[in-house]
Every structure is written in C-alpha cells, then in structure tokens.
Image 1 (tube, helix red, strand yellow):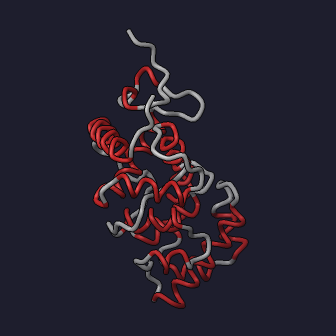
Image 2 (tube, one colour):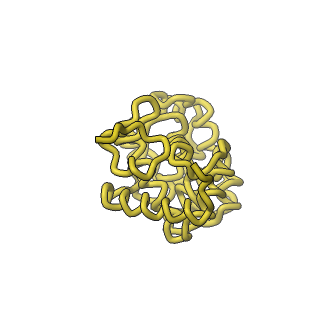
Amino acid sequence: MARETQAQRQQRLAKINAALALAYPDAHCELDFRNPLELLVATILSAQCTDKQVNLVTADLFAKYRTAADYANAAPEIFETDIKRIGLYRNKAKNIQSACRTLVQDHGGEVPRTMDALTALAGVGRKTANVVLGNAFGITSGIVVDTHVARLSERLGLTPEKQPEKIELDLQKLLPPEQWIVISHWLIWHGRRRCGARNPACGQCEIATLCPSANVVAA
C-alpha cells in the first residue's frame, strides 16, 4: 500500500471527525466543575485515575474548598485525607496546595489564562493546561493528549509519535485550530465507548472503514 501523504491524512481525518461529530454530538469534558479553579483541581487529580472516581471525590471536595486560599491554607494532613480515595493522593495534595499558593501570591487567587502561567504551577503540564484553557475559558492553545487520544492517534495512523507533546504537534498540523479543543473530546469519548485499550469494538465502530488498525471482516 502506498504511503499516505499529509494531504491524504488530513482528508481522512476530516472524514473521521465528521463521523465522530455525528456519533458524539454532546461530547464534552467529563470532569465535573463549575469554575476554572475546580477544573484545575479536578484535572490534577485525574492523572492515572478515572474521571468517574475524581467526580465522586470532588463532589464533597468542592463543597468544602471554594477558593484558592482555602486549598492553600488547609492543613496538609487534612487535605490529604479529603482526597485519599484518589491514586497518588499525597503527591497530588502537595501539588494542588502549592499551585493554589502560587495562585494566591501571583494571580490574585484566580486561575491564569495563558499556557506559560499555567505550566508554571505545580503539577500542571501541557495536558492539564490545555484542559483548563479549552474547557474553562474556551481558549484554543493546543490539543489535549491523554492516554485515549494517544492510543487512538496511533491506531488511526495519524502519527507515529509516542510522546504527548510530539503527538500534539502532529495533530495540530492535520487540523484547523477551531477543531483543536473538540478533537480531544471526540477521541476520548470514542476511546471510552468503542476503542478500548484491550478490546476495541471494531465491529461496531463508526470509523472502522477509516482506520488502518480496524479488525473487521468484510461481508
């Protein structure tokens, strides 16, 4: 089979996106939040943890902690207990409290709206910053690359890269900026509902005919 050109890959991805838009018209960030601070905290907690588990914990957490100062001033041992049901809770508690101290000291207690300012916070990398900018502020700064986006990008033959930053760059080259935010929602929803890590449901997949990795027997 001839190697796919960049233009051909862009055309195929446009078809993939059209199909995913039909399949998941309500695709959105599945972390529960009411403001940028809550989304920042929830996203830090979500590393190596399911959104469902994070939402269970933050239901109580967000009722107790309302401002960056609330997090910053909490006794570390008490805050750790509040998020103990989350994996890696000690390290996450330390990062959240450190990040919130920076918010109080340098940003008037508000979550900043730039990539540089966000990634300067403890526990915040490009993925978390992109989640916050895109979903809390509607700012197109990049593409969220989590485990689902990385897995599907490889399976769909969109990039050979393994590192999230390089995957993000390759996807940006294939997509218009107005799709940078929603593409992650579509791929994450598809990864959770169809294209699982171990048992992808290729026979029921809406984009199987556009996927070079699909295991579908022709009729």
